[in-house]
Amino acid sequence: MIRSMTGFGEASANAEGTHYFIELRSLNNKYLKTNIRLPDDLQSLEAEIEPHIRRRINRGSVTAILKVSDTSASAAMTVNHDALQHYVEQVRQTPAVQSGELTLALGPLLELPGVLQPPADDEARLDRARAAIRGILDKACDHLISMREREGAFLVEDLMKHHNVIETRLALITEHAPSAAEEYEARLKARVDSMLEEAGHGVEPVDIIREVAVYAEKTDISEEVSRLGGHLEHYQEMLASTEDRPIGRTLDFLAQEMLREANTIASKSADTTISRAIVDIKGAIDRIKEQVQNVE
View (tube, rainbow, N blue to C red):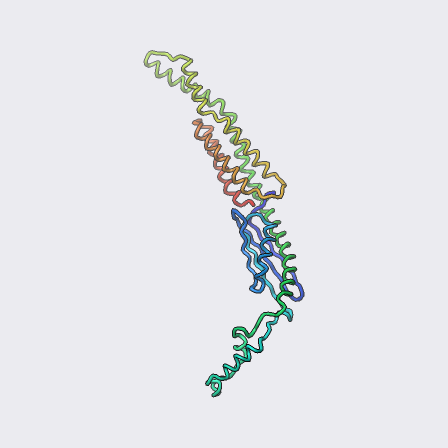
């Protein structure tokens, strides 16, 4: 099944007064690259989230952003009374405070290092977050994959248009190739007859046949046409496949092989009709190569 590498998915859930929201965005990439952004107190869960994404996504640059809003009482920071008392005693010894010029305010003291500390139940909070994130991550991946499949359907439609161009031009080349040698023979005989007629000589048929045979051998494109046709058939089969596996890199390789055969045909044949058909084929292959960069 063809999937695009671009897509978006999101999901959210509430658990014990805490709201979890995750967003997944994916862009093109030769391999799978993940960028996971978590709140500071949940950074330890990154090692669990990344493998989960890799099990669902094969290629692309995937960014995962988790936002957490905790409205429960357990979200409150704990006051370190010993640290706060130590700060208060030091501030009271300040001459400006002792003289009354400055008043002792509690608010700024709470912002000093070590006064406010995270809740003590870190492990319990991690367990709750782990369970919630696992569920919404699956849903977000489902939405992302669904969008990639919809985008993939449009890619298949476009890729088949280029396939049809190549198929039509290749059929034209296959039909026209046998007559190319005959046309060359007629042109060669006419040119030689004209030149020798002026000199008062004739030309032996065997000489014409020999020259045409050499030309036909040098310009024989039957193998290249056959291989290009085989690659095109494989290409069509992959586009129609319903297997759940990444095929982007295989399609890219096939496009390179098709271009190789097209270039060889162009270099071996001087026939105008074939040359024009090859120009169209190479143009279609170039567009295929651009599009398969979007395929997972």
